[in-house]
Amino acid sequence: MLDRTELPDALAEPGRPVRPAWITTLSLANLGVFLGFFTPIQILLPLQLERVDSAHKAALLSWVTGVGALVAMLANPLAGALSDRTTSRFGRRRPWILAGALLGALGLLLTAVQHTVLGIAAGWAVAQLGLNVMLAGTTAPVADQVPVGQRALVSGWTGISQSLGLVVGAVLVTTVVTGVLSGYALTAGATVAAALPFVLGFREPVLRRRAAITARELLGGYWVSPRRHPDFGWAWATRFLINLGNAIGTLYLLYYLTDAVHYRSPDQGVLILTAVYTLAALLTAIPAGLVSDRTGRRKNLVLLSCAVMAVAALLLAGVHSWPATILAAVVLGAGYGIYLAVDQALVTQVLPAAADRAKDLGVINIANSGPQVLAPALAAPVIAHAGGYGGLYTLTALLTLLAGALVRRIRAVA
Image (cartoon, rainbow, N blue to C red; front, top):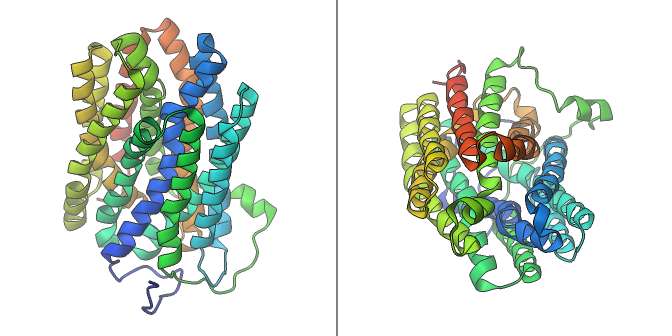
């Protein structure tokens, strides 16, 4: 049922707490985004590319995911900028969430029927385009409609959706269906279905008339000056480094279980690890969000999360056994749960302008997708020439600790 309460101005600073149903449906929409993102990356693409060329599967996975991440880097700020200027009577965000979900699902279905590396890369690029349009729409409502004192709690719930995307997607394509084609089809359907409750169930503030954006403004929107907005710059750098470390570690997880841990069923191992990781994140995200909202402090909790995640990476670097990998998943999930809740709330407090929230969050999201491009270039030579998987996860730990150091440079947020 539609929320019939009077809606504030679209650019006003939100002051009214959002309701549990709103949080639930937005979290479900975020779950749809990350189902579409992570299920192919973790399971479907590796299996598909192994069938194409098993001898070069790692390099091919790096190349395909890198192409997709490049599309994501370009699409997210662009979709955000267009969303910021949308004057539809349905609001600024919901039309883009629905359009992105449909395009992302189409891209997943196109990827599913490809049998060459170029075809898989092209299909995945279409999927990334649609999913990043959807992401631009699902990220902005927290800054649009959630008051500062509730943002870490809401970010905790929406952040958990990111972790749940890993485990729910893995469950869907390993237990509910079998086969790559049916896995993509189910993922595509789930992505669209998850978007509908928020799109259909809640109104949002409608933007009054605004001048059309020019091509020059669109191109210029990819840059937010760190000199004029230093806190935004430090927040971006912190997120980039954390996600770079995370991308380096997770990109090769299936192959890590196969080649280093020698686990008997690597795809089932990924499912178990993501379930453990998600449970740990669930146990820390909401409490961390509550503490952060009540105290008004964000940076120390981000620093704590970085230290915890670095410990997990060092454990993976030093001990290549299944019990150690399970323990690392627990520690990593606990640290990442804290990070997901608190960092997103912190970011919404350093956005340069209310009129460009989605565009600026799209620039922030480059720090999520950009590492997917860079990670393969860093990871492949480390595995080959700098200590194998031990060197890979040591690098992950160092990047994460550096991120924790940089977050302390932010001044406007405690």
